[in-house]
Length: 90
Image: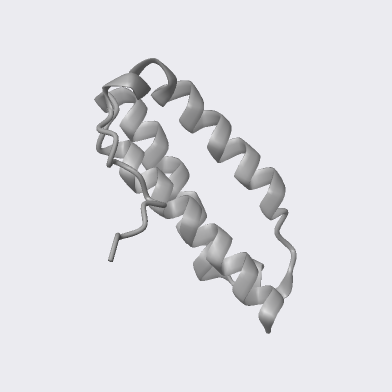
């Protein structure tokens, strides 16, 4: 059960990264990223992550590589507070 949670969490983190990126790239790249997001969502619905038939590390490398490719030139234009990992200060 905990392994399934770990795999689904990884998939949902990738979906969140894609969602943020889609809003920040030109339409052509956004469509490509949206297709990738839909395929990951379909994996979540299929149950492949629950039974462990999914290579999460391979998928993560693919997604992060594509994000670097489309966001690389525009990374300097992102706001400094524009992160998914930012923690709120007390």
